[in-house]
Length: 298
Image (cartoon, rainbow, N blue to C red; front, side, top):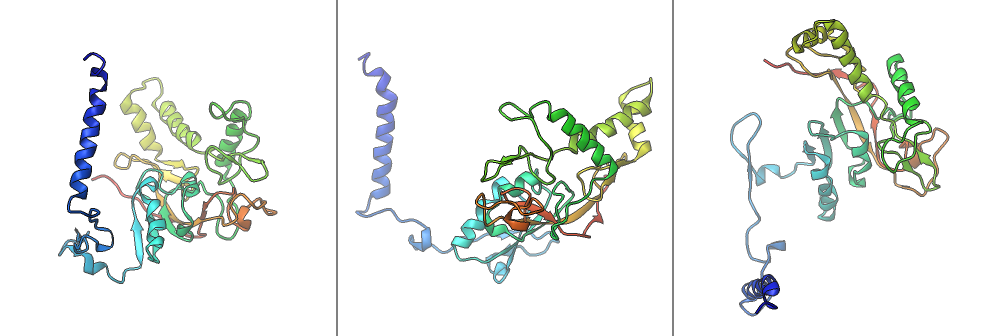
């Protein structure tokens, strides 16, 4: 009996599998599925609430629509375009950057070719390259951030298992990558901590010797305007009813690289050629699309 005890869970699992198989296959043939209506069921129905109120939106209301507006994180959304194309759907896509990491440089590197040319409205500006093949010039503040970033990470690895940087490459996502020839293309993440710490520094210095949460906040709110490296427009504001820095949005475009890792970079260092700063997909900025856009807490 003692020898049987360890196998009781396996025996129970085997019984469950046998019973499930019997139930699925009863009737003398393969179990019906809903694929292509094989089960004889009507197509699934749904209803969506309209943003402006009114009657619910149902299946028939979607007929003839050719665009998909995506507001989901890329980890949830990226399988859809490929599957939609397999199903014969030819759709255009538009991203509204309201989800975590939705339209950053790393996100673009994970997007499928079906999204090539899709536009994203975003507050980020860490892509640096635009659709004309021009790279954005650093502001004096951004240049200082880049200098300090390179000074730190050319001497120290960015993480365990990664080599020290040689030189940042504008628009290349974390953690960098090697192209098809084995050339290392170092990442460009030089703005974030630098921009944040400039605000922290202003709060501490403005509070003076009487450093409290309130005096720290008041000092930041008093200065109000800050450099916003890596964000659309390059500047932002922080106020009591607006505790975030970003104050503008811009358009960027998903750009895929059909050559992948097989081609070499062009004279500008772009792969594709003329498309992305690494062999992976990227976002490119649509020139002259920065507009002020934010909201405040009531």
